[in-house]
Image (cartoon, rainbow, N blue to C red; front, side, top):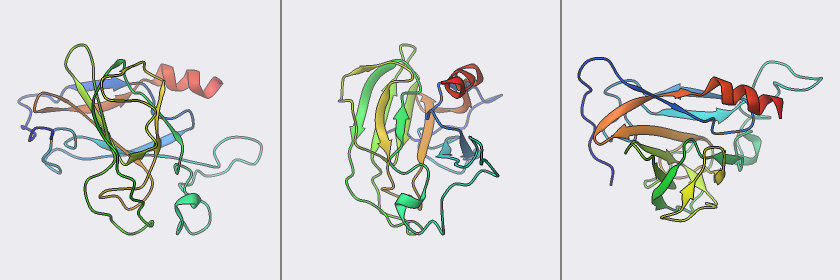
Length: 183
């Protein structure tokens, strides 16, 4: 179980992470004080946006049709990339699948990676893990798929970072995002 978050003293420290997806994505941040667990506090919920590439691109959307099925969501089942180099120190599968619009019960499918400097990255609502506890991962490596389990309303990945009980603010490596866009 991750530690209870402590309110950072002074400015909030940020951590720069490798992108979670090869596709364009958007994230909504949890503000300070919204969540109490170190891996949730200052975390962010990320989803792939579709219809933003190719000849017929338009305004980005999170889902096709009315979004009532998991398969409608562009994120559903998408490969999740390791956001850092490190060791897998937490892994909790959850095979349950929520119907979009219906919040499931904890726990979420969870993966934690610890960097060499002790920062822990926590990702939730995952499924189909391709790594095991104790594995060493490299940023950009496929580690799981996007699920919709635990306390989630739609397919997405929650990402949080902490140093001990101190939550860190997530920022994305824009250079790596640009490199992925060129693939």
